[in-house]
Amino acid sequence: MRRITGAALAVLFLFPLAWSAFASVRTPTGFGLSNYARLFTADNGIRAEHVFNSIAVSALTVAVTLVVSTLGGYAFGRFSFPGKEALFLLTLAILMVPYATVLIALYVLLGWLGLQDSLIGLSLVLAMFQLPFSIFMMRNSFEAVPKELEESALIDGCTSFGALVRVMLPAVRPGLVTVGLFAFLTSWSEFFAPLILLNSTSKFTMMLAVVNMRTASFGAIDYAALEAGVTFMAVPCLVLFLILQRSYVRGFMSGALRG
Image 1 (cartoon, one colour):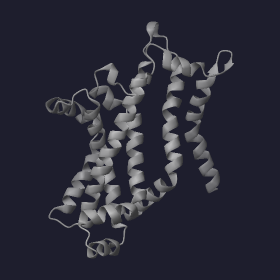
Image 2 (cartoon, helix red, strand yellow; image 1 turned 30 degrees about the vertical axis):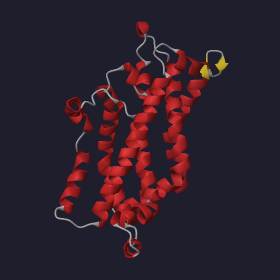
Image 3 (tube, rainbow, N blue to C red; image 1 turned 180 degrees about the horizontal axis):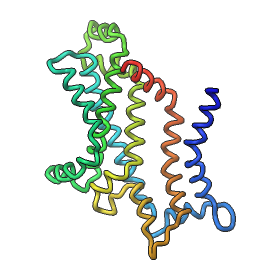
Image 4 (cartoon, rainbow, N blue to C red; image 1 turned 90 degrees about the vertical axis):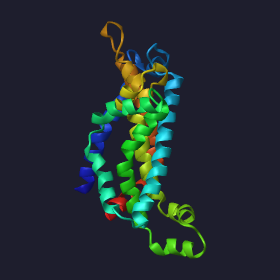
């Protein structure tokens, strides 16, 4: 029964993606890659700069999220300080705030910082929204590591930072993979934040470029090319998940069990 239920859920979730892939290669005369050719050659299609922007935003978001959540999770998981639990609960409380309600305020803040309409500013905003969940995951991952490992490193002369780099990080690798994968998937497919925070078409991400294809002359929409764009954007996510799925599942389950 479990296998039947799992198979049914897999079909339910994979059907939209499979349909998009099928529609992306379907042409009026049969099957081919002409839809992908139009995706990259149309006036309002995807350009190389859009691909670069998406890669840059995703990479920077993942880097900032990993660094901050690792340090924050290590502090919450291994150190005691006044107000620790209250601060941790306050961090988690950010998850209850719909991020769309604060984007305008963040847009103004980025203007004060000189990061308005920039990929760096967008990446920092996306990383900020990832941090509550990421810190929660990393704290649980660090707490799951036996304290004896860290104490042995400290006795051997390592500082707290040295123990973190040499001993703790290899031990929490599944948690790092989980946090990094979540940050990548979110930033890669994010639409609303780039729509609000980016003004220049040269800085658009692929998601904005694909959505922009729906705006055509006389209301005509090239749905086949649009499906090609959806499939093209989904491929990196599928490849990364298939490569990292074992570490992802271990990291997510360990974090959930400790939580």
